[in-house]
Length: 375
Image (cartoon, rainbow, N blue to C red; front, side):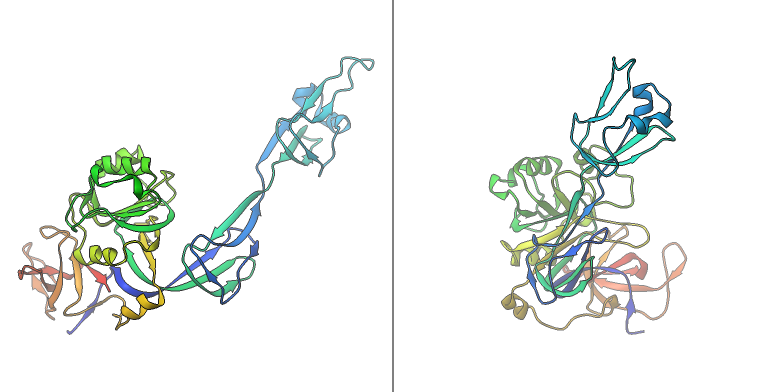
């Protein structure tokens, strides 16, 4: 057998990338097909219904619910401000009247003679969708949003926390296997996407948060450091909604793992260039990986033009990462794809492949133990 297919992460200097940017409910699309957009541009907007506040006037006025409508000083659909009088009790012989004032601003949505409650709907909440990707609008989805396309350098990570953010790439480490420590984070890294080498330390992350770094991308992180940063154990299968003020992405895994040299080199080649980062990760069905998207200029795109691999194709020369011990985290090239199953150390049979490392060492591992690094 000449080749096979396996899942993998993309690390490529050039690819066509599309992103779908849509509103949660129907609204106004602000861009048209052919428009050039920047990452921070707003492409669509709408308004979400405001929060509701129930007010139990029957209790507050000490009267049956059916009597509440007759005591109202406002009508359904009318706007009210804080301290506006909503209802007034009839009192006794015209005296001892009691007013109920609104504690919130909004619109009177309902007045119920059954429950004696008034529902005040708060002001509408504006919702805007940004472009995220600097590129060209190639499709408009009526009343929802747009699809944006661009030629980019693209890196998928293993795991991330935090949502979408932007900034220029800043290299904090000089080598792919250098750990990201506190002293490497400087004040001029504010709003930057900082790239480390190996493990990012807790103290480095905390200083980056104080400085105002937009994101950190590095080879690995210790799970105890991640817990310290978040303030809790991450037990969910989906990330990206954390509100830390920073996005963290690891390209290799947990622990003292160096970033792959080719990944580090890709970032180094684009130092200073604006990039979009999203730490959202889903590790169950419908896998979603964190990503770093670097839009290419026309010149940069021409320089990186070349043949592209078929997605998931595993063949001799393909770069792979081993994801099981005893070679966990090591990266090499496929040297051979034996067609016949081999007997493993456990005595079971499995399809295997040979991987050659940069050192020249060749090892044989099950095909299920590797992850393709798609170029």
